[in-house]
Image (cartoon, rainbow, N blue to C red; front, side, top):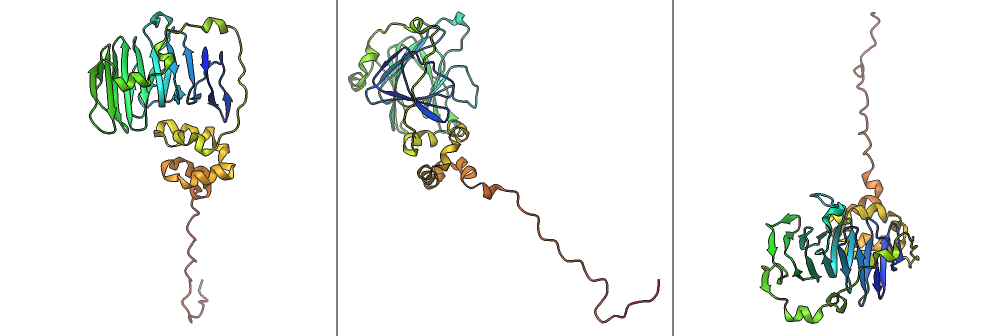
Length: 281
């Protein structure tokens, strides 16, 4: 993370830390930007990722199809992928962006993405990119988005692709996304930046992740299992169990114990009632 403005938190392992410039992003890190936050993350192949206001992103999330070295699950907020300056000879897989509504495979293009609760926008600022719509676990045929085209989709409506970014999209575009930002990774080469601990998180802080796609949320069970001992967190898990049934085994392990064998039936009597014992051998 080579540039940081505003506040950003990183859910790392069982806890949470404050983001800071120079911090190395690790696999399974969840970065959450504040309402006015902005960050730049640089990769070894010279590609970059900009995180804008309210961005929630999980790095190197697992995938049912494959697991590239650099993958990003974008839950909500503003993002900009800068891949036009990528160096393929660096032998580093490009960044794949996945989200609840669509996937964008690695591409040598600059793409701006906005993800809201009910609407998504993708603008290919430079170069062409490819988008794969998702509906639950189902995926559609790839959609090619040429340079200068704006893809938008609201709810379950059919997506539209227009030439040029829409006016409302441009008006809301984060200021940092309009600028040409410098690469600063060399400033932190060889430095080990230690993040400062942040206050612990409650259920409400991570609820969107606990209710995300199954392949995203399930690994979080082992990661946050200790939170099941917190009374408030536990109560919220139980109240929302239908949205994340994988927690049922953690909260109620007795339900998953092996069932006891059925009781044995008493042995049948060898002698009939009232019959005299035989003296024959």
